[in-house]
Image 1 (spheres, rainbow, N blue to C red):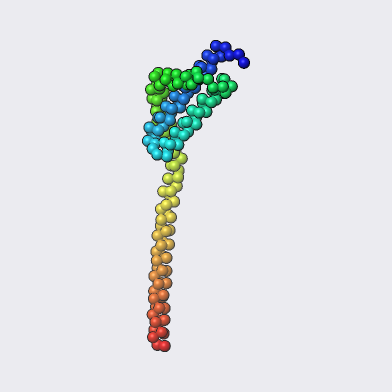
Image 2 (cartoon, rainbow, N blue to C red):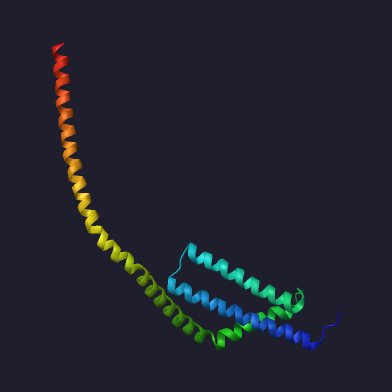
Length: 166
């Protein structure tokens, strides 16, 4: 199969784009990790997910653009894309991602409050009568328990008296 310069340039620029995409994914994981203060197992899980996504991006670009044939300039394109990304727009993307995540967190907190407000309201309405009923039942059970324990004590005394007589 004949490969001309324009095809190789297309493949190279595609891998540069893959490097830019990998840099974007890296910044996304970096911002999420910093915001979540991820350590231990959560950080390890993020690393595994990052590398799976990175592998998927690289192999997809290689298979789509070059039918799965690996050439040395493809790796150079990925590295060049990463370097270009980190030296040009990484700081902008990090700021935008931080801003977007803060808005997303606020949105979810507002939704959570909206969903939880009726539940809290119902709890406040229902909890007082339930507590009163619980107290009444507890008092009644204590009285019953005292009577039962008193009758058990008297039964024990009667049994002891019968044993001593015989």
